[in-house]
Amino acid sequence: MTKARGLSIAILLTSIILFVEIVGAFFSNSLALLSDAGHMLVDFLALVMALVAVQIAKRPATAEKTFGYLRWEVIAALFNGILLVLVSVYIFYEAIQRLFAPEPVAGGLTLIVAIVGLIANAVAMLVLGKTGVKSHAGHSHEDINIKGAFWHVLSDALTSLGVIIAAIIILATGWMYIDPIISIVIALFVVRGAVKLIMDSTQILTESTPKDVDLEKVREKINEHKMVRCVHDLHVWTITSGKYAMAGHVQINDCKISESDKIYEELRKMLEKEFDIQHPTIQFEYKKCHGSECSLCKIK
Image 1 (spheres, helix red, strand yellow):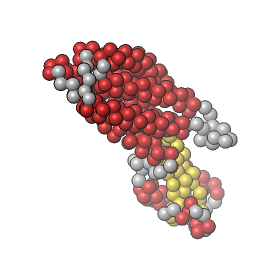
Image 2 (image 1 turned 90 degrees about the horizontal axis):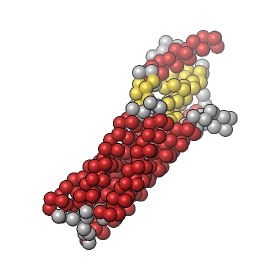
Image 3 (image 1 turned 90 degrees about the vertical axis):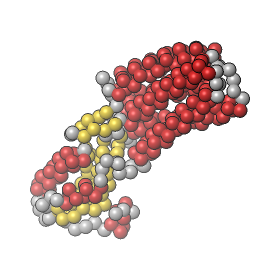
Image 4 (image 1 turned 180 degrees about the horizontal axis):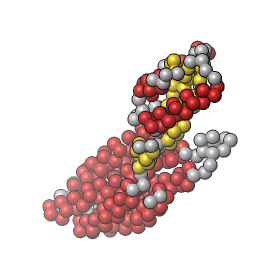
């Protein structure tokens, strides 16, 4: 299943449950259910943004956008993480208010709506789970854009589960405090996942070394080639989920230009197989460049 199709199905399910939960929260007066609806609204916006990002990312590279528009998927994931934090903070605030002034909640209606929401979220999770992993050269990577959308839906499924628990307790005991307590637990859980999503997105946007790539091991593997004397000014970064690029200076033994092509091809195949680096740029040198004159070359 393509990413676009998976996201489209998830958007349809989310929009239906969003409407049902808003109406249910209004008639039941349940803050936990309203918090679930709030997450659904964010989910809907997140999924739409993820779908738009997928379509934009398909556009070809240009002279101005030499890597194309692949980073839009990362930007969408970052924005989704920020949205999750903002909504969770608001829900946390509202829950604190209700702890001091609890209000009656219609547990029966809340329970029915939450069960429907949980089922819909489970289906959406199943659909997105089939599209969120990329495989290349024996390596698997999570698509951060789909990961952001999946995490939204997962958090909402857990929220629905929390609402079900709150509704059952209210029906059994009449204890209204469980409604804001569940909301606080949900908000804290969602913030934790949102912060991780923001950090992962920022990691890519700041062109940090991918977490699953050991830069020293990359250097060691390149140095193992019989024609290589040393490697310096080595950089590895992520263009978008599962697409790694590398740039580095490699000193080699004196040889013909035609022989350097063979060295490059051998290194390229090794980098793709061992580290899933699909876009290596290697500058061959006989003598080490004057790194002191280049700010980037000062990076060890």
